[in-house]
Image 1: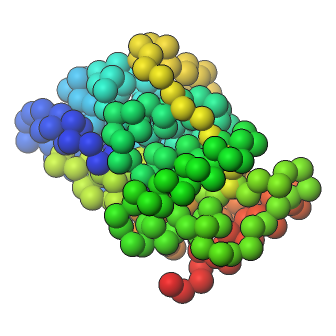
Image 2: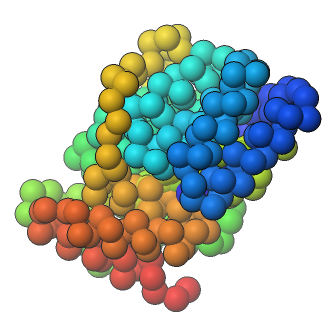
Length: 294
């Protein structure tokens, strides 16, 4: 999964506001735990930073990413809501919350967040790509194809560009369909990992896709308008286990962030959890395309 936050400079600046050697050390420890896949422990470390520095957007954003990877989708969304109260114009946090909303199955809400991210950063390729996946899930085929194509055109990284093309079926690969829909559903670009920005680059003290956030079966998505942070989704406090769709979405995000092994692991796990034969066929096709040497 990619960086916890997106590439916006706003979060990088805020990360510097975390004061004190102990707090900085705890943040770095949390980032290291996150990179090692110890998400529950990472979340605990970020909670320690929040206890000392409750106004740290970075800490709230990173704990959200750790919680999302640990399967606490609702907890992640709640943390992103708080981060947006502190930084209502941060494109990265909107992007990350969009990934969490995708994992929760709140596709229309995810569209709104991805839209807001693109309003704040017109060159946010992964936000356009994930919005396309949300549109696809909602059955809005034309909107999905438009966003995916635009994302590919904007993406400067050759590896991420190729991953996007394959995930969305824009590389000439066969477009798989299910018995219930003729819209392919590509994975979602993963959200940056805690303590990192887009592309997995560590933040000074740093979900991005797919989230990770995640690959969700190819689908299309909508846009968001500026609204008060308090108006954001308010999920219950219950823990939600990642299902096949959430894992698929996170897989795509991981692939876009360069974590190919993690992406393949998520996709194969999703295959074992997915009860629908049509969606299993989509996942199998996605695995084949993403695992084909470039």
